[in-house]
Image (cartoon, rainbow, N blue to C red):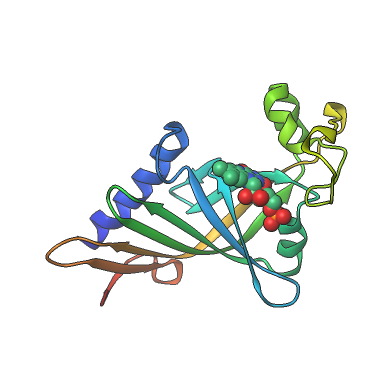
Length: 178
Ligand SMILES: Cc1cc2nc3c(=O)[nH]c(=O)nc-3n(C[C@H](O)[C@H](O)[C@H](O)COP(=O)(O)O)c2cc1C
């Protein structure tokens, strides 16, 4: 049964790459702030490799998260499916931060917008209309994370199901009291 749960998690993460309405397409990324506190934000799942258990996101190289990841490579992801009431909590670390211009160049302008504002993400502006983009000079960044553990929780009657899968244990899995 543990194998089945782990396989299903992987299947759902793969499904989220294709299905834009899948609950796991958007998830929460937690990084450690420079003062030791936590920063949370929503991101899009851009790739998931079930063999390597690696996750990929895209971002702007100038965003705070990149600075924080360069200081502390350990992060958490939170995925939640409200229909099935399934929560996945993934502990991971940065595998690679790459500034891939080929992916950026292939994006339509409507997507390049997310990585090419002249104003630095998070900087003060007077009005949303004042943002200007320079598509020729994007700050597109791909971040690949290597998972260390995945904790599954499904709320259901009569028994909630909670299990932990660790990479050091070859992802074998162990049920936990919910
Ligand atoms: C639905 C949704 C999807 C988002 N997807 C991404 C994403 O894939 N990558 C990203 O860098 N920011 C994404 N954001 C914006 C982040 O949540 C965050 O506001 C931004 O990246 C700045 O974060 P930081 O200052 O902590 O680095 C998304 C926001 C929303 C609401």
